[in-house]
Image (cartoon, rainbow, N blue to C red; front, side, top):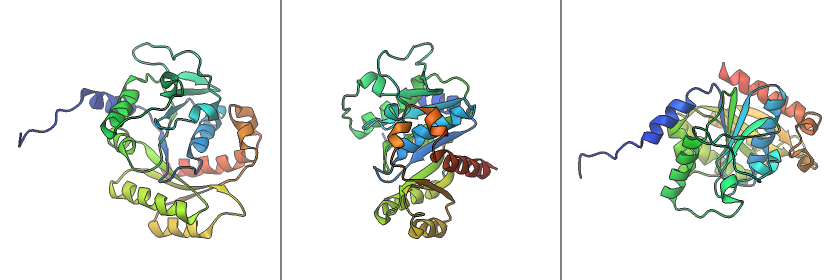
Length: 252
């Protein structure tokens, strides 16, 4: 009826309160798939854990979860339950994903069902105290992005690769983030060869978005999956150091 608003879902109040206690929430997002967003979020979570930070990773790409592959998380056995679901600890990272319940089968959901599933995952996950919590977001603009934007104080790290086509999609995501006054750290150019594409840096500057740096194309990157020691001794470690410094600097 006219004049009546939709009832407030009590889960949303609970989620806002719960996630407000985390000092640092990073949402790795992109306007386009295939740019290495899940790889970066998973490896960066292991990087933070290796540096001694209490780190969590939540895979919110419900249609195509893959963070478990990056972390090297075994799918056998469901996470423990106590006042919700306790994330599994995998290579030093507290990790939660719908894949533990879907058993890697495809999930088919309409928009409202997807938004509800994201809200439920945020609600039931019982995190310990964390220094950093990372969301691996699905590509594009959709219900997951809207739920995270509404319910958490996540700061966005937007990923593109060295392609004008990729940047075209990423621009739309950046415009949404800026229009909605969401917090963001900036843009990362991933899978870079030969120093990157000047067009990406120029577009970032034109939009007033910090260019956080590059992550190089690393042919042996799959050797780092599930092996934080290998990550910290790889050429990517130095680039992650710079990325981390730029993120911390951006919080000041």
